[in-house]
Length: 225
Image (cartoon, rainbow, N blue to C red; front, side):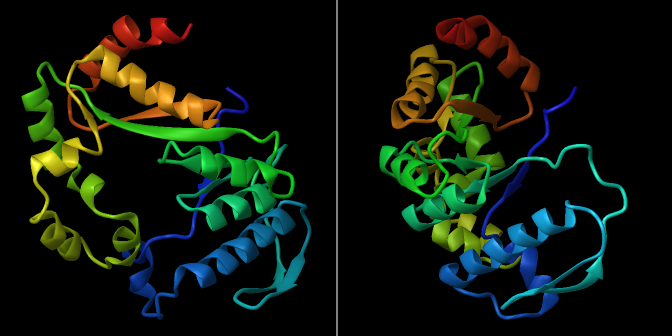
């Protein structure tokens, strides 16, 4: 189906970048790099041979030969105010995992951000009981309890595993909606709407995807029709 794809970008994580053997820059530099990278993408999507000289990236007569009929929207991930402002300036929309109205306001008042879509990610772990969901969430997604700034700095899976040893079920459950309590799921989704998000997507943690879909079809989606 058309118009179902968008490209989500952010300032990155060291986990994905350390393999190049380069210094992992601080967040303010990464925001500048992201801005240049988006400029390059939009330039290449114009077609033809394109050159670019930036502070961080350069191109010499680069060309994309298989151009889409319409360039995909670029959604920018943000967890803080400065990133949200940048998302409004360079992106076609916002992605965030934080139901924060201040962040949404910064996005909307930044240059061009007022009417762009705003996607909120809600992470849940559905299971038949809350205790079962907590165990699954701890096993499958302990990173939920790792602070975002630390998440972006860890370089290897071994480092993530080492940090995850200090995370318990209680800490993970404080960040993830665990279990079959319909009202808790609805309340979390509603918090994003109140914060100003106009789209919410659900990240289900764990192997029972069929049970999750049936639960949401039966208990959650009717609350939002």
